[in-house]
Amino acid sequence: MRLNLTLAVLSFAALAATAPLPIHSHNDYTRNVPLMDALDNSVTSIEADLWLKDGQLYVAHTEGDINKSITFTSLYVQPILDIIEGRKASPIKLSVENPLQLLIDFKSDGNASYGPILAALEPLRSAGHLTTFKDGVLKQGAVTAIGSGNTPLAKVLAASPRDLFFDAPLATLTSTPPAPGVDWSKELSPLASVDFGSVNGVLGTIYTGIFGTVTSDVHDKIVKQIQEAHAKGVKTRYWDAPNKEKLYIELLHDGSDWLNTDHLTTVRNIVLANS
Ligand SMILES: *[C@@H]1O[C@H](CO)[C@@H](O)[C@H](O)[C@H]1NC(C)=O
Ligand SMILES: *[C@@H]1O[C@H](CO)[C@@H](O)[C@H](O)[C@H]1NC(C)=O
Image 1 (cartoon, protein in one colour):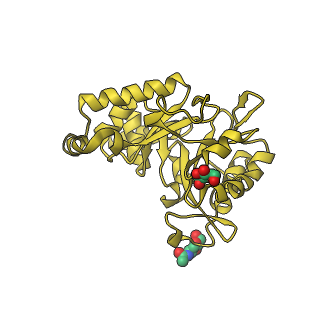
Image 2 (image 1 turned 90 degrees about the vertical axis):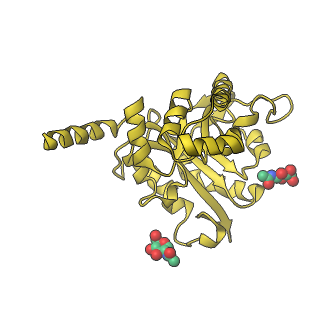
Image 3 (image 1 turned 180 degrees about the vertical axis):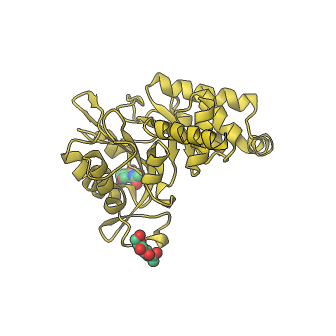
């Protein structure tokens, strides 16, 4: 009986491995095996913190953590290209149908990093794998690259063609346009994000700490933000939310598109049990 149950769970997991889940691997490079732990858990949205130093792009949490053998190219660009082109095994074959959302958190100066980051994406670009907005048409690729952190909005806005997008500020999506006369859209920002604490507030944070969920006011605020984003075709992500099962379920049921987490297997199980 026990064995049968285990086998059933295993085969369910094996099946589910091919269907991407609405989960985002926050600071993915801190997982045991960057990129692959995410894909093993059916997670197709990942985030890397990038530092420009001496002309090289390193993946690290702080500048002091830089390890010269861990570059953006070695940790992400090359393995991603190898998976798409079938040279590297993966439980999810990344493709236009099953794309990877690659969130690039610009940690160093935005304007100085922009050119080098675009250049680092060139192997994916030249092979035609990047989602691209060109001549008014958004063409889905196997990889959608989105800049957050210090990403220079003006440069992303001016880019044509555009294949590095901008993580929009979810809380001010309807009040503050990206530029005069321009509106937020999926062609500029496939994703909009906000610090969960800023939505939940000080009392809300205490409430969530006790009950694991949010007050009805905060619930209404979240639903409104998600609806406003969806009306523009933009997907949503709340980051730095407490790691509470009820809160993941709340965000899932409220329609938030990406559950931000450092706990991939836990959240995978929550999503599978609650979708
Ligand atoms: C730097 O990264 C390499 C490759 O992952 C690893 O073998 C090495 O131990 C790391 N060096 C330090 C100082 O952490
Ligand atoms: C990039 O440079 C412009 C012009 O100097 C400046 O207004 C903007 O804030 C800079 N952006 C970032 C993200 O550093």
